[in-house]
Image (cartoon, rainbow, N blue to C red; front, side, top):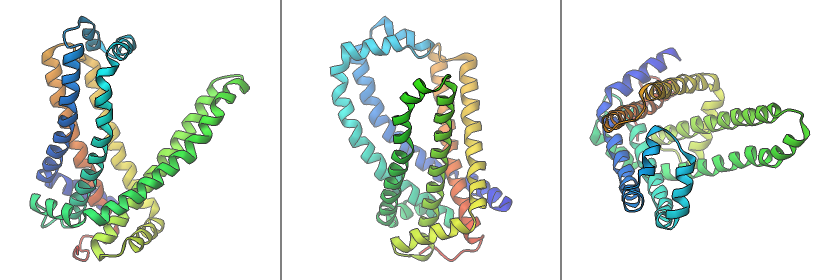
Length: 289
């Protein structure tokens, strides 16, 4: 497990050009929405002094007033978001296909191989992705629907609100744990498809079998890389809270810092994929089909 973890970090760092390609794709999608939001804000409250209050942090009053006065101007934007989410889903399948293909072929990995892997495995990975998306939605409803039904009665029944808070926290932990297992199963299923060219159903069964046989190893790997990501986010918020975005210079500076963190988060994803591949197949797996 230690070897897989270190090998995953090494592979992710060496494949920084592939990470840069993914970053540029995500940046392009983000700018597509960001430019539209900017134009809406510029046309509505771009010259309002009230917007300066947001420079010092979240202000619920400013946002509430904006939605009341300018809500009609952002309605078309909200309608476009659903199409952008669909576009993001498709690009996400392509991106993960390319990343996994490069994780499986670390000695041959290149930007060209990334695009090739994303194209070759788009349709099978789309089917696998939709399967796990439905599972994630079902799992979310299974956990949070009962919580939503009992949360109000619990506030009236228990003598303290802390019991309700504990209920929500426990539900959150169970929910995140389930999503983590689905993530591992999803990655392992795609690796099965990638390495052996299995049909979708056999890939899913094979991915679950490998996870069940080595669940502690994969859960530890997920915990380690999740811990790195939590540390990354914590460092970012500590830096932000220390000075805050209170001037144009700091806004630009924090934007650049934020983009650096986004870049490294993509690398963390690739590190996890590479570590799981090594943990599943070793360093000399069968060639990806």
